[in-house]
Length: 244
Image (cartoon, rainbow, N blue to C red; front, side, top):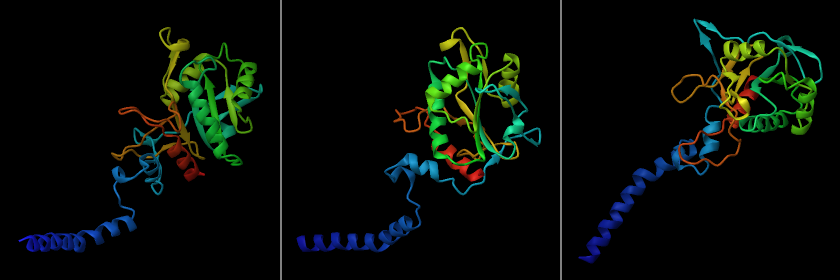
């Protein structure tokens, strides 16, 4: 009886090997192993869409362009959207005394700047939502403290209402005074990605809809607890390179 049992078990193993092992090998060779089987889910998630073209943001049947602007940068120079013509660039709204998300956002932007060092057709446009405090001198000191290379990165200040209109109506990124918010101002920790022709671009989410904006307020390599929003800096760098 024991011999028959061993024979039966051996036969089952043999059949399993004949049917399933070649399929498993094929899946590995074709790189079709599901993400839950991967050791590094973050990396898989960030690279799976490399071949997909970036989306436009379409409103009322028209592709959305970045709005026009003209402000003063950290060097006292007048900067407008025309200075970014032909460049791929990122847009953020921040303030220098922000105690919460702005330091993370600008740390991420510095890392992106370093990653794309030497790319003359890449730039960053940062707009202060506290322009009464954030003078060109204050912005210049802030840039020095963060290691910001001002070659293609402008930190801008100017008329408060124009900056708020640029954020809220122009880009659709909320910014405003809020006595209950840390630092006295509330804003979204998102980055807008603009292509060489001035159109706002993004990759699609898992449902096929454009992300619209990229999450900038989560550290690039943050270890996440269950349910936390993950960083999007890796996919943003990929998409910038794709546009370049």
